[in-house]
Image 1 (cartoon, rainbow, N blue to C red):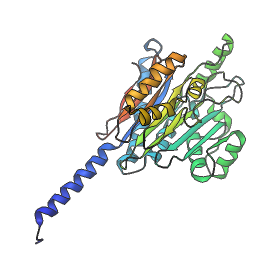
Image 2: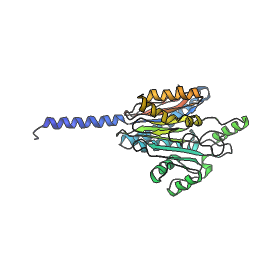
Image 3: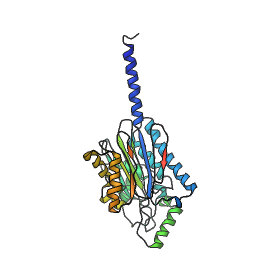
Image 4: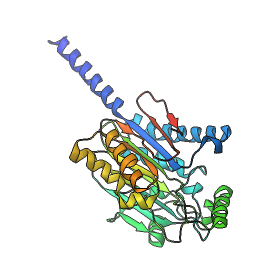
Amino acid sequence: MPKHPMLILAALFLTVAIEAQESKKAMLVVHGGAGTITRSSMTPEMEKEYRTSLETALRTGYAILARGGTSLDAVEATVRVLEDNPLFNAGKGAVFTHEGRNELDASIMDGKTKKAGAVAAVSIIKNPISAARAVMDKSPHVMMAGRGAELFATKMGLEIVDPSYFWTERRWKALQKELQKESQAKPIGTVGAVAVDRDGNLAAATSTGGMTNKQFGRVGDTPIIGAGNFAENESCAVSGTGHGEYFIRWTVAYDIAALMKYRGMTVQAAADEVVNKKLKAAGGEGGVIAIDAKGNFAMPFNSDGMYRGYIGADGVARVSIYR
């Protein structure tokens, strides 16, 4: 019998309490795009499909966090699920350019090391978010674009598809509608995920097909670190969706982090300040998801709606679309 059984028991209880706290800290937040999402244009069947798809993505990513995996692995896995789903403007569901092509962008960032990777204007990589991860992990660069990014992804053994893989009737009809109006491209959506793991490390991942009817070669905020995607343990992880040109010019993702670091604002206050004041005043439409190292998160948007959701220690995926 040990000399100090009570001390041993106390130590065991302390260990269990610490592990419980760490498990409680793990949190995953996701978005599937912001824009004109009105109840009048949404059938009950389609709304159910969106909600189920977001829940599936959340559970996929959180399963990694629940077993002690990293936030980086969790956000990549979550975004891959959304890239494979034609409902969302990323991967399989990417919108068309003016010329009738699909050009995809993605980025990922590790809040612990501040390492980041991005790809832009790619058209044959099935999961651009994994290509962005490969750029971060297996090259000395942060961003690769076009043919160079595609060749790199091929060398890394990532899945390559024929451009026809990205063709969907829904997105093709959307392009024809824009062409008939002879209007400028409109913001339509992006997918993204932010997470904190048991070790308190943050990560952010964002992927998009861009804007319907965009000009050939146009690149938005998604692959630009500090604009549509950012993560650092000292402040927060952010993934944005909306009118990319505004997110670039107002460095939306980093501005949220800067307000937290230099003005001591909470993640909710900082995200609201940027999205609902600065961005809105400038005429920029969209929203963000943001999370800090303690698991506090925010999901503000200034558009009609934003596909969004979160999952934490209770394992329940909660999703929303409208305000």
